[in-house]
Image (cartoon, rainbow over the protein chains, first blue to last red):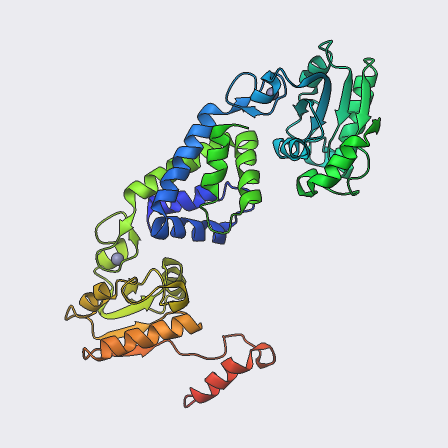
Length: 196
Length: 196
Ligand SMILES: [Zn+2]
Ligand SMILES: [Zn+2]
C-alpha cells in the first residue's frame, strides 16, 4: 500500500503485546486521526533513547548519573530496598512508609527465560550494598515464584557478606505482583517486614 | 522518575487501546530490552507522518498523489467499490474477484460518535463517482448497523445522480454451518435467495 505505512506497522509490532492486527489499527489511527500524536511519540522515543540511562547507584532509569532519589540527602542511607522494576519502586514510594534508598534489579532471576545472576548485574548490587553505610537490605521482589527465588538468592549472597537482610511481610498476597497491589497492603507489609 | 520517560509513557497512551499500565510497560520494555526497536519506531513514525498522504482518486493512504492501484491501467475504470478502510480494501483484493477501482471512506457514518456526512468528505466521493467513466458503484461497507446506514446514505446520494449502485450480497458465509450462523444472517439469506 505504502512503504512508509508498512514500515510503521512493522515497527509498532516491536511494542510488547502488539500483534499484526493491532499494529495496523494503530498505524491507521495515527495517520487518519492523530498525526500530532504520532509526531509526539516519534520525538518522545528519540528523546528517551538519547537521554535515559541507568542511575549509577540504584540502577533505575535516570537522565542524570545519580537519580534524584539517590541524591536526596534526606533519605536514610542505612536502608536499601531491592525491587524488580521502577514501577515497583514507585508503588513503595506511594505508601510513604519507607525513607531509605533503593536498588532496582530491572528484572528477576528466571531460569526458564535464561535470566541468571549475571544477567541481573548482581555484582553492581553487591558493591552497592557493601558501601559501609547500608545496615539493612529490605527484599521487596514480587511474591511470585521467580520473585521469591530472586529474594532467596540475593539474601544468601548478602548474608554471606555479613549484611542484615529482611523481606517484606506476607501481607502481599502470594502470587501477587507489587505493581497491581493496593498501597495499603504494601504499607502494611513494609511495616511488618521480617528478617530474611 | 525521569522527564523523558514520563513524556514517552504519555505519548504511548496516544495509541488506541493503550492505557496507563500498558504504556508504562511498553516504555520500560523499550528502554530496558529494545532500544533499537524504539529508535526504529521513532524513525518510522516521523517518516510516515511526513510521507503518507491520501490518494487524490481513491482517498486511501498513499505516498504518491495517485496510488499504485488507481494508476494501474489494467483495472476496470467502469467499476468503483466503496469500502470503509484500507484493511477492508486489502481483504477484497485478496479475493481476486474484483478488478475495478476503489474509494476508501476512511471511516463510516456514526451519529453517536459525531461522524456525519461532512466528516467523511463525501463530496470527494461524489465528484469521483461522477467522472463519466464509472458505470457502477459497489457498496462494500461492513454489514454492521453503521456500515449499513453508511451504504444506504451513499446509495441514495449516488442514485439521485443517476448512477447504478449495488451492494455486496448478504448471506451465510462460505463454509458456514447453518447451526452456527446467527438467525438474522439466515433470515437475510432466505430473503435474498437466488435461483439455483
Ligand atoms: Zn538512583
Ligand atoms: Zn488511489
